Image (cartoon, rainbow, N blue to C red):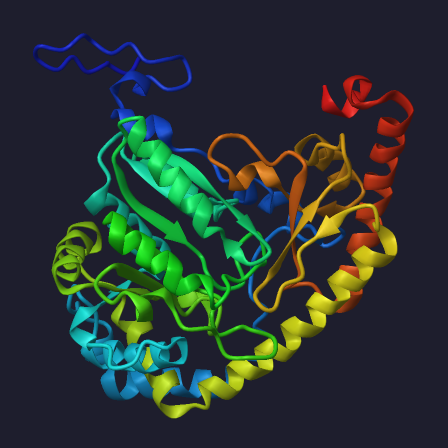
Amino acid sequence: MSTPTPSPQGKTPHHGTRLDPWFDAYAERAHNLRASEIRALFSVVSRPEVVSLAGGMPNLKDLPLDRLAASAERLITRHGAQAMQYGSGQGWEVLRERITEVMTYDGIIGADPDNVVVTTGSQQALDLVTELFVDPGDVVLAEAPSYVGALGVFRARQADVIHVPMDEHGLIPEALVETIRNARAAGKTIKFIYIVPNYHNPAGVTLSLERRPVIAEICMRERILIVEDNPYGLLGFHSDPLPALKSFSPEGVVYLGSFSKMFAPGFRIGWAYAPHAIRAKLVLASESAILCPSMVGQMAIADYLGDYDWYGQVKSFRAMYAERCKAMLDSLAEYIPDCRWTVPEGGFYTWVTLPDGLDAKAMLPRAVRARVAYVAGTAFYYDGQGNDHMRLSFCYPTPERIREGVRRLSTVVNAEKDIVDMFGTGDNPSSR
């Protein structure tokens, strides 16, 4: 028996396809959904024989799991009825107050808990902001390259993403001014700029202290909202984070934070700290989407922040990631010196530039056959750039596995380079 196709009154009947009889019934925005290139690798990188330099999973081995288990037992025993119940759409007040304390490390002093909205990870916060501000065809400015998860949100919401160049000091203010001027000259409406200022994903660079107030002033002058995404801010290898953009422009920035990298991603708890009027709309949008965030997760994190030396734990993470970053950079210098790469001061990633003529996306299947994985640079651009780049992650593998992964990767890169040197880029079979 065949599945009937809908025929809404006044509309052309939908015929669909053999694989999906409802294909023509989807809203237009549904056709903008794309599989993440990183998620597509998960089935491969989960194999133990593959060294994954692809994913951005935090290493949780140093978390005090026994103490956290005891804390969870106390939580359920003493406050189970509240933890298992619905909560506020804005988020639990106790956690919102503790979030304001966490943000002081980013230079956001005197934050009002009433302007914090707890979300299901900072990814949901970004989606809610985009939902509130972006109509189809509106422009979102984003660094070049930019976080793949953000690009997925913008594409799903039918935004037109325009990239702004970066260098080793982060977003370039002069390029931002020029990009704004050109977009407006073309009749485009810019709704906000999305920035990851600290230990950038994927570029690994940090927006310099000198540029932060300049960029905040440019956006205030041009009346462009800044969406500041800061999941890695506390994970600097040798120092506390630089002052957040929010500290330079309190009414011009929506600040997004997350406990996924500094604590544990399994709780799926993040937040947005927004100007009051935006906060009110964020709460309404969040309630429409999820009613309220998980009370169990919120209460567990609030307990962790209140009863544990969480900042001491963050410092131990810093030392671990610093060691792994050094293993990555030393291995690149030893095995693939013909490449270039960024030198992170924190976070999870380095951004590698391949020798001329090499295509990271075309090369990836050969890398997987060599039992190593990375993410091709094309994942981090809206417009298909990035073939000559790849993101390497050092957060999860041990230093020994990182070294072995880079060694395996070098065999692929060097073989590809030999082909280019022999035949030139036009005849390189790997680019076909």
